[in-house]
Length: 337
Image 1 (tube, rainbow, N blue to C red):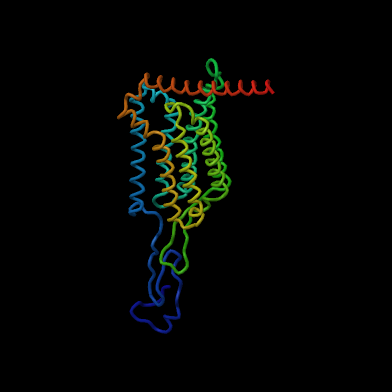
Image 2 (cartoon, rainbow, N blue to C red):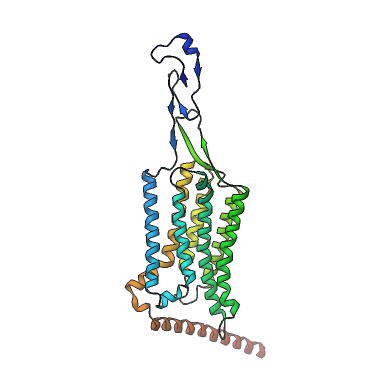
C-alpha cells in the first residue's frame, strides 16, 4: 500500500491520506510508493523450460531421422510393411504432438490457451488412428482364409484413418465454440506477484477430448492383442501394448495435478505427459525396426520374411492338425459309448 505526500517528510495529515496500490502493484505498509508485481508463468529462460524444450527438439529430430531412414529403405520388407500413408500420417502426428509443447511455454495468450490442448488432442488422435488403421489392415489380410481380401477390407484402414481424427476435430471445435478456454491475470492475496494463466482448460470439453483418446488407446490395445500371434515383421503388438500402457499410466496419474489449478505446475506436468506419450509412440514402435535396418540388414530381406512367414504358417497348420486330432478322438469316444 502506498502513502500520499512527500516521501521525505511524513506528517499526521499525510499518513491519513493513504490509497491502495493498483492491482498489478504492491507495497509494504507505510511506504510512499508502489512497485510492479512480478509476473509468474513458465518462462522460456527457466532451467525447467530449457530442458523441456531440448527434449522436444530431440524428439522432433528423432522423428525426422526415423522418417528419413524409412524413406531410404522404402523398398525393403520393413519399409513396405510400414504401411505407406499410414506411416507418414504417424510421423506427422508425432511431429504435431511434439510441436504442441511450444504452446505451453512462454506467456499465455488467448490463442495459445485455445489451441494448445486441441492441438495435442488432434495430433495424438491421428497417431492412435494410424496404429489402429495398420492393425485393421493386417488383420484384414490374415483373416481371409482363401484368396485376396475384399475391396471393403482393403479400404477399411483408410476409413479408420480418416474418420477417427475427424471426430476429434469435431469434439475440439465444439469445445472451442461452446466452452472456450481463455487467459486471465490472477492476483493472490497479499502476494508480491501476479499469475498469468489459462482458465477453463480442464472442463467438459477437455474431458470429452481425453476420454476419446482413452477409448482409442483401448481399441489399439485390443487390436494389438489380436495381432499378437502374427509374424513380427507384420505385427507391432508388443510395441503397441507398451505404448498404450505408458499412455494410460501417464495420463491417469497426472489428472489430479491438471485439476490442481496451479498454473506453472499444470503446464510442466502437461508438457512432461505429452513428451512421454510422444516418445513412447516413437520408441516402442520404430526404434527396434530402425536397429534392424541399420545393424541387422539380413533380417530385412525377402528371404528372411519368407522364412518367418513359413514358420508362422507351419505353427498355424500344426495347431489346426492338433484340433482335428482332438475332434476325431472325441468323436470316437462318443461312438464307442
